[in-house]
Each structure stands twice: as structure tokens, then as C-alpha cells.
Image (cartoon, rainbow, N blue to C red; front, side, top):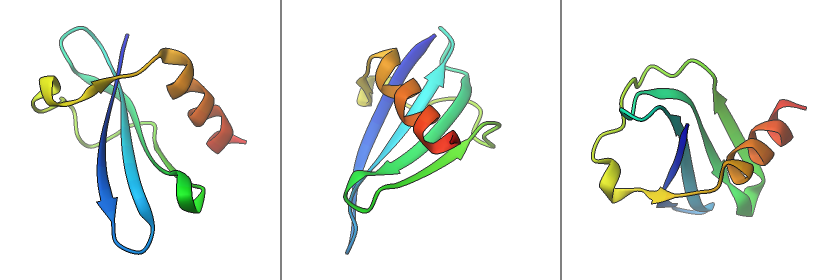
Length: 75
């Protein structure tokens, strides 16, 4: 699996990070959005978006970063 993230500002909240868990062809298996400043995490276990668009524009992240956030939100 590959783990990627993007970032964008959200007025009044801070920076929203969208995380993607993908296979080698960049097909999305799971995704989530996290806003650390407000402690919001939204999980998408079966996302409607099926493929990462322009994966070269996203940052690589360690699997542990993705799974730690996912598990935190699942509790």
C-alpha cells in the first residue's frame, strides 16, 4: 500500500489534510480528512473517489501516520 496526503487551508479552522491509502496503481482503498487545530477527523472507509488525481502533487507519508489517525478516529 501507498500512503499519501494533501493539505489546504480551511478559513477559521486551520489546515485540512486529506490522507489516502492506495494500491500501486493509485486506486483509493480508504481516505480521511484531518484538521489538527480543531481535532476533527472524518473517515471514508469506502470513498466515492476511486483514483488519486495527480499523485505526484501529493506528499508521501508513513503508514503509521495514516493508521494512527484512522485508529484514533475509529474509537
